[in-house]
Image 1 (tube, rainbow, N blue to C red):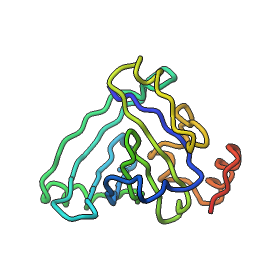
Image 2: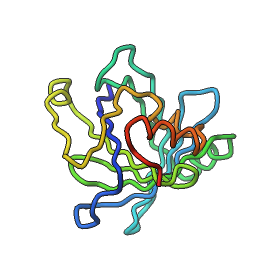
Image 3: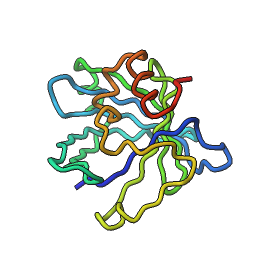
Length: 167
C-alpha cells in the first residue's frame, strides 16, 4: 500500500535545507501502469534502476493505491528502456520529511513535494511546512502519469487554479 500526500511549492527549498539530491528519469510505458526509473545521486555511486507498477486506490485521501517495485540490473533496465515511452525528468531534493521534485524539460518551473507514511493515522496527522503552497494529494493531474503527457500551457492553467505562476 502506498500512502503519500503531495503539495505544490512556489519555488524550490533553500539549498541549505537539502540533505541529498537525485536526478531522476522516468519512462512511462504507454498503455500500461508501468514506470521505468533511473535515479542517480549527484554525489556519484551506482544508479538505482527499477520498474514500478502503480494501481490507483478507489478512495480519496493519502492512500494512493498499490505499488509494486522490481529492482533491475543495468541490462534489464536497458531492455525495458528500448520500449517506446513518455519521458519525465526531475531532480529530487531530500528535505526531511519531504521529497521535493523540481521538474525539467517542458515542466520546468513545477515544484512538487511529497511525504510518505506508514499508516493512515500518520498521513492524517501530518502538518506540512508553511512553505507548501497547496495540497494536491487528490488532484490526479499532479501525478507522474498525468504530468508526463501535459503541455506547458495546460500546466500553467492548472497551477493558476492554485494561485501559482509557472516560472
